[in-house]
Every structure is written in C-alpha cells, then in structure tokens.
Amino acid sequence: MEKTIELGGLTAIGVGDEQADLAVVVLHGRQMQATDLAPFAHSLGGPAYWVFPDAPLPAEPRGRTWWPVDSEARMRRLAGGPMELSAMDPEGRAEARALLGGLVTALARRYLLVGFSQGGMLAMDYVLHDGTRPEALALLSSTRIAIADWQPRADRVAGLPVLVAHGRADQELAFVAGELLRDFTIGGGARVTWLPFDGAHEIPLVVWRALRSLIRDATRASSTP
Image (cartoon, rainbow, N blue to C red):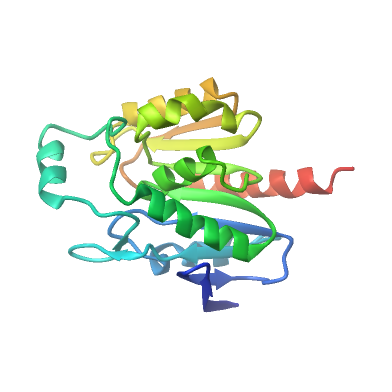
C-alpha cells in the first residue's frame, strides 16, 4: 500500500505496513522528490514501513531541495570538476534538521535513515546533532559538509552500522568526497560498509541490494535477545 501522509511538518509518501516495528526513512537529493524513489520500496519490501519525505523547498528547474542552493555558484564549482563540499555550511541546515527531527518524532518507532546526495548530507548532519539515533545509516553518493562543525561530533556515530556508497564516475560529487565521508565515519567509530561502484551520481541495483541487507541486519539485531 502507498499513500501520501503528513509527518512533523513534511509531506511524505508512506509505503507498506504502517504498523511495522521498523521504519525506513529515505531522503532524496536536490532537484528530486519523493516520487522519484518511492517505487523502489515496492520491489525491496521487507519487514519495514517506508517513508519518503519531500524536502520543504522548491528547486529549479524541478523537484525539491532541503536547503537553498545558489545555482550560479554551484555551476561555477562544477566547472572545476566534481565537487567535495566539506567547507560548505549551507544556510537552512538547522531548519532542515529540525523538520527531519519532527518527522522522526512523529514516527515514534525504531528507524533506519537513508540519504541520497543532499539527503545524505542532511542525514549525517541530523545524527551528529543529537538527533534520535537510527538503527543504521546509509549515505549514498554524498559528501561531508560543515566539517568544522561535524568533526568535534564525529564520535556520535560510534558503533552505528553505516553504509557508504559512491560511484567512481560521479560527475556531481567527486569520488574522493565519498572516500572522505567513509573515512569520517570510520574515524568516528562507526561500523562501516564501504561500497564503491562503477557508475555515476545514481543509486544502482547493487546499492539497493546492500540497503536491503542493512535493513535485514537491523531487523535481526532487534529480535536478538
């Protein structure tokens, strides 16, 4: 079953059993929307309630964004090649984090947090800022941001299962950005699964399979006495 829901001030698509003990919250990237990713929940299934929130702001030329992005500045950065954004501290980061917190609170259950691209930046930012700790975290084709703020908080991922996936041919966010994100999570003490893949700025089947394994592991861990 799939339907549109409201959670903590965000509109979202909910897929599956609303009474499931585990929720999987999937944050889309810039210039995307919930409908771009929700179909994958039908094929992956599993013992979870899938939630795909729409970011709060419109993006040009399509989709939504979690915080404002200066398109001209972004194009200038891309002219120099794929980006690594650890020095960037976007305006609206705290507001996006608060909206995600409202959604997690409204879900009121164990959850696994997944973020693609800009959604991955927000997912990690939320976990580092005393957000309700997820069962696991998946950072797909993403990068570090606001590193001066993140670095002192790195140990907040200690012991957390984290999947970091990145395409070797990513022309949006440099492959080294994924490697640095991997190293950051390892340095914080997370239990990291690193998944480089031969592809671009995307979520290929191999990544969805790894995500399904992460969900199954989270489910098994919760049922172990």
